[in-house]
Image 1 (cartoon, rainbow, N blue to C red):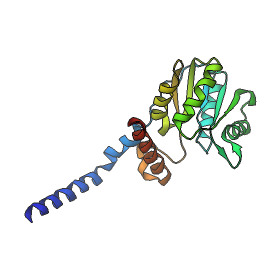
Image 2: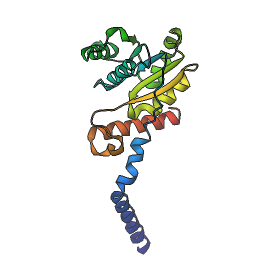
Image 3: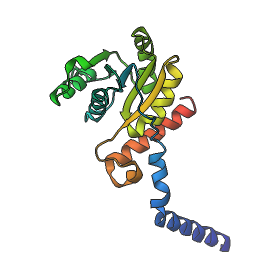
Length: 196
């Protein structure tokens, strides 16, 4: 009986300490997912699918405008209401004043970042791409960078994170959407690590 009481008190004490110090250790779980490379000149920029707010394509358009790459490939791995995501990205960029000729939609079907990288590898190689700036959401940079480096050999990959609306990775637990993105990305990261 006494031993159980000690265990309960220790568990409650540990939980209280975790709660009181959560702002010290929780940021790690968001910031770990964000791994960017320095932006460097490349043969092309690739915008990964999966951003329904347009932050990725607008970040890529701005990088291209600064002269880092001559073309922006748009990954059309998914569709929404019958429209391919690459076409939606291109339309958004044009509506923000960027030149249509900068953007090249790449349409195919993929259900994961791994499938996306496998579908894109031969397309990029056929276009003589040797260096690539990949733009994705900040919380997606570490895993997607690892996936593309593994599945797209022969191309130098540089990852560039796009800020995501309502998601400060240093305070990811404070908004519902950011909690969802970070927890789902951790699940995908762990699945990738163990080969699922």
